[in-house]
Length: 628
Image 1 (cartoon, rainbow, N blue to C red):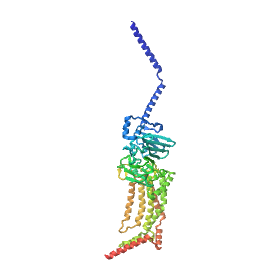
Image 2: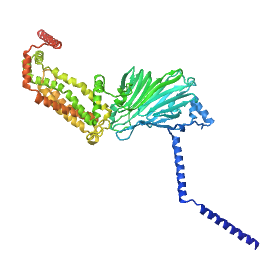
Image 3: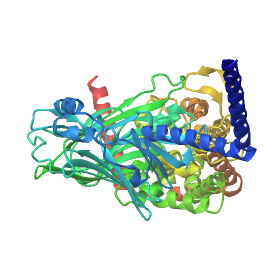
């Protein structure tokens, strides 16, 4: 009985203790507010862990986040020293994969392995498909310095770990990437960004490496880039994508394909129609090798890249150290922007050589910029075309007047040819004498046309290079710097494309009627000469061939250029109709010619020389006939 009592008491004790504990737990359970706080703390912890994972991939731009670590054990350090020699020190530093920096114009990433720019995005621009403009992204570019060391190694900086440091002073951000041998000995890439500036100050310098870098071996800087496609028509963009360079004290040149060797280079530019990547130097590079290759094998296939660029630039040691001051330009191929740097970068804009470039730089560019500040650029093209045609209207008048004179003289010229049908030389002599006396030389009609050629060619170069036309809409056109589309074709027509553009059609129709007016007059005024090609027939062929050629050629060209030709030819038609119907009077022209015939005509040296040559040729012909 005593033992049973003890067992029952024990059980009762355990039950009482359990009840007390259960009551205490119930009393101390968290309130709903406390549960919410706990959940919030848990989420914050998860987010902190994610941030830590991201930070291990990408380095932020706060200087306090950069530190030196020694996460490598002694065995790993031995392996690194065996591979990298003195530069194993950098590998022991704490360095994540990328360093991210931004300004108001750039979003940049630096690859800490190699210390170079691995991503460059231009914030202010998008491509034809409204996607961001990347000059550098996804390993499309590389920057490397190849050098030898005194312990018989050949190293490439693109394979070596750099230690980053970012500092900011007002509107200037400095990114220092150091390849270290020790804290006081290193190779440094220094980038300096300024707000609102597409030019990045860049320098490569070494400190304390004179005993490590082998001065007897060539040190080469290699810069490569594959240009991303940014325009709707890759063939049109590729036409204006090329490699430019400034050399020999201010000369500028370019190449569209192949390799080249250049001396005394101030800058190298990889131009992608409307955007350019340029490496500039204060101390000119010697013995530079450049290369460009077309990556578009089939224009009907959607292609990511346009062309690949490469340049090899030797670096010179000074006192056993590298010290090269340079600059990077990543930005628009905009004449006004490039010209502000005063470093000959405006040569990247292909305005043409000689007189054509002069006309574009000092006449059309200022005029177009002035008009564009007051109206849309589509209207500015129309207004500028009207002004140009008005200024050249006197040239068209002279040309048409010359044709009218020849038309009036046609019966007399036909009579001369009939009179001397058996003596072609005599017929030509009398024809020239009559035309000279009447002041109706065929050359008088050619010269006005030649005067218009520089303007014609200059504008042909100007509109495709006008950055202001990029993504500017006008009427049904979305982008004046690209072709307009009124219909997509389910197939591709060689040399034409897989779409139909309206402005080239309008321009072709206008040029057909313009040529019909002008060539019709020429065909009437210039009869067929024996032994000579049938000019009338050739002009008739050209009247049909030229519009068709324009239709095919301009279907993939900038609609702004087709708009110019359409408006230009419409105005030319109007001017010709006014001159023909309201200004020129054939009866008056005939009377003026008759008056000129009566006046003694003084021949110039050229006319005298031609007459003498023809007389000599006639005498030789007569002598040959006598011998026969």
